[in-house]
Length: 575
Image 1: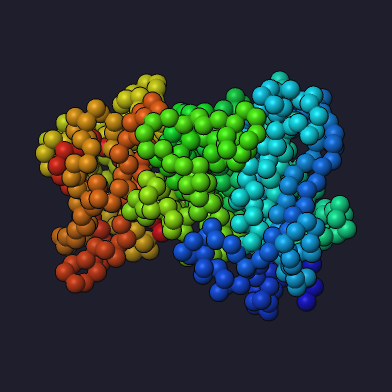
Image 2: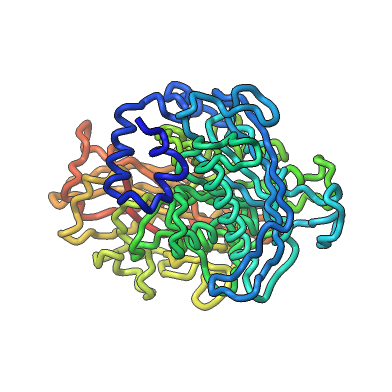
């Protein structure tokens, strides 16, 4: 068996072998070499309960620093937008023993995925945007994710955090900040491609043929928009990097020329008490990703964390670290500690990459029923997930304010007593918005009720077989309204009913307050209404003791009890 067929070079970038040949090779390798897995399956089972515990490997460390290594040039060519850019990063990797420049854990045919982190905008020199201070005085922004790199390396990843010194706290008329950050990530990937293929790294071939083709990207703040830009540029310019998962932490959405949208699995981590990107711009990227009409569909997920701020995801930006210019940017009650906030990052980002780059199917990164993973029981957090394969019953995005017809063309009816029943832009400003508490970039339905009401949406005859799907899913959020209809901690129940063409009914009750999957608005830091997720397994709908037949579902009903004001979006049958 030629081990090179499964390394960072040949599966991702070789132009010599056709796609069919590469696929045959990979299938054959999977059949013959079960032990080639980066992490043994029995070890991954430990991550199902707590992915932030150390994995099976010791952690090695190296750093690289090449000054004035290249120019960042716009896609159309011409003068450099950012000349003489440094290539600098810190690296963690699975090692035989822990320490600096230790051998990568064997056997030598074992390959590991690569994950690259990029920080956001912050002071470059002590409390300034100068680029003239001595190297020893620079703010080491890229070291703020060591806590994630260490855990990832122990779980069989080569984890790299880039120092974006030359593209931080600066700008260029020739290239946006975000394109520059994306291209910086791609230039680092160029280096890793060469090091893996040819053993040309600065550590005497330490990573020669030791990397899988799979790549994950993670970025914080402007770095979050930067890694999405890297995925986009890689795709549209056919650069060949096998990017398979993208994570953005409290990201921006500010590029003036283009709205970057990923086409790989995307995980967005948002902080409710973010005082820097306080308008939660990252929600806009999430809402634009994998729309119903997009040719390419991919999964996307989000975790929304109450009490978390912008800076504490990076230890260097946290005052207790001792670096200059660090600050607590958050505000409002219910704040969580810096340790808990970083535990949220670790307990969601690490499982996300374990799932997509190691194939750990049972490892979860989303909170369930308002409760987070092990160790985060006291953190109020909400998750949403959209599968690539789904049936959109109503996404409210047809461009018309028509609440009486769903996306499938089916009729929508109500009991007639809603105080509000209309579609709106769920944005903080602009035309046809409901109120300024929203931070999304989507169109949705607002329902207000002072007594029990029913919402009914029909499936056309040709779309009634939902037996290939696993769950009924929708996004929903309680709306900030001064506690007129949405009184805090007031019992509020939704009953979901599926009706077959033959008239058989099956119900599932959803306790809004008890399960906490529909967020109560975050009242601080400007007030924010954000959509959470209702996900009900279709197996829960039963006709007595018998599962409801799913081949002829005529109608979905939502009975809203108590009082309330909610926004709904993306009603789907999902895998």
